[in-house]
Length: 340
Image 1 (cartoon, helix red, strand yellow):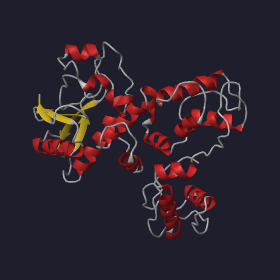
Image 2 (cartoon, rainbow, N blue to C red; image 1 turned 180 degrees about the vertical axis):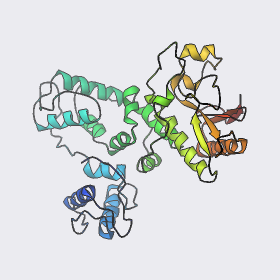
Image 3 (cartoon, helix red, strand yellow; image 1 turned 60 degrees about the horizontal axis):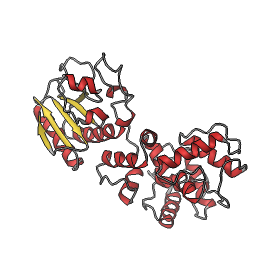
Image 4 (cartoon, helix red, strand yellow; image 1 turned 180 degrees about the horizontal axis):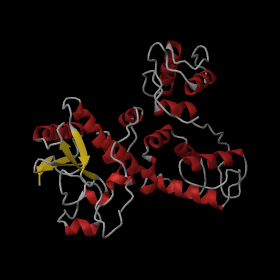
């Protein structure tokens, strides 16, 4: 079963569903008593989850988030041999299933370690910074069954593994969640991975270059997920005490401002033509320009300042700036606060 939502004891009426029932059965199979297997997340199930979390040495909160789900349902291969080209069997079928699930397509899950499986294993090893030899040994098994990888998939950051590599994916998630960018999945990162998934309001399409003459909307915008999640967190925080505040990404055609550049990605030619900085984070899709309006649809300098302050508060290692009290530029690096 695939993870879909946070599960917790919310009181009566208890949270219920097939996913709760699956958790209860998995807990029972692992030797932790959740009470009746009734699909209701009551006190006994929450207690069993806490006991399980403590035993697994993960965050103990009685909540089944991506991390706990990943540990509970992680495939447990019986690693009795290293898998390589021309091997066959159920363990080969399992690695094929996992490779396909995480987007390293290897074709049919037929239990035959052929050319496509070999290529997929090597690509996975390369992206995960493992020894690239096409052999599925303990390190490769450990990497592909790690609960954190499932968490990155649920958050959507798995696409960054394909675009770049494992360390880049981890760093961009850390930047989005305002924690130390070291590329290491430690306690803080695991804790953030276990939180409720944030879906940013600004999409990949919003981040496309708007030059309309050089690149045809370059690029797709998938690498922008980290900056979009960070922007979403800051916008939600600002909305708490700035009633009626509205946001728009300046790469969208709008009546409020004739944007000189583009709010998300910029291709090199467009950035140069419009006077953008040569090392702009926009060139990599790692920055965003956001307009701030009040409830009347007018630019509001006080609201803009509140948004900037929250950006700095929630992203102490990143940068934020503004232009003419209208556009707020935000990224995950750069100067602390500046004007342009």
